[in-house]
Amino acid sequence: MKRRSTGKVLAAAVALAAAGAAAYLCLWPVPAEPVAWPAPRPPGYEGPHAPNTRLAGLHRIDIGSDFGPEHIALGPDGKLYAAMTSGTLLRMDADGGRREVLADTGGRVLGFDFDAQGRMLAADAMKGLLAIGRDGRVELLADRVGPDDPIRYANSVAVAPDGTVYFTDASSRFAPSHWGGTYEASVLDILEQAATGRVLAHDPVTHGTRVVARGFSFANGIALSADGRTLFVAETGRYRIWKLDAAARGIDVQRATPQARVLLDNLPGYPDNLMRGRDGRIWVGLFKPRNPAADSLAERPFLRKVLLRLPRAWLPLGKPYGHVFAIDEDGRIVEDLQDPTGAYPETTGATETAQRLYIHSLHAPAIGWLALTPVSSTVPTR
Image (cartoon, rainbow, N blue to C red; front, side, top):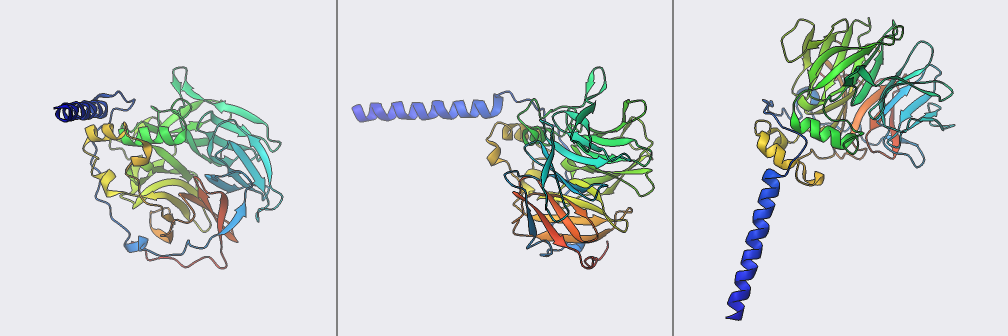
């Protein structure tokens, strides 16, 4: 009788725990309100993205105790600059020698470029648009578009020949400073799919900031055409790259407009940084390959809301896979470098010089690079 009674108690406890877990997964409040969207079927690695190992065996530049060189660029002084997870900006010789800390913004710089005066213009996800002098002095240029319109997630920067600073605001909903960092804010934005990312322009003369275009699902990397009239923008949450008229004002890319079109769609991974290279190339980093399980939830917003209640380690993310590629301004793929082992993690972009191709990363403990002597051969175009 006692055993039967104990069994009933255990069964009741299990049932109660199951009911509690179900209630948590279905009802616990989360900050995002996912919406359905028609995800295209993943193309896999084929055609110009056929598997290869051209990114394997990277040389590495030591960065001390820092990690996560999310963005790397060569400055007008010939020095190599890199933005770290810690908030520091490193400056060094092109081979990694004479490394020093240029500045610590106290936030997280995700992208930067240089103006005609040699200043670094940096998109800090926690702070906004910053100017950083060669002496390391940090100045806030913009943290809002209007009095009631904050810049929540500054991400990437491209400086035009006329001095206009174009930069992305990845999400108008989720600020890394309020949601535990850049990763958590990006997860919330991409799983929600409300497409609140935008491209902004800062005028260095009037000091005003305006909206160029909105309606992106996590607006990420940005680059300018050779003539400075066109913007290229990586839309991470929907696996594509846009081509925009740099003179546009307040357009919504969710609505048909001659000032914006999708240049590359249905990429095999999540596009991140866009970087101008040599001979007209624009380099693209895919920090993770797509996961079919994630795409299968595109039109199931309720299940994506359930996912937000689970530990982040349970999210259906793609496996580690190194991948950068280059396009021309018409969207033709002219270079493709991969490392299926993912030994250098989360390849967010590539910076090309005459001698080297530096590889950006979200979490790598070093700067990876390949020798370019000569520039590697092109892959078949589409």
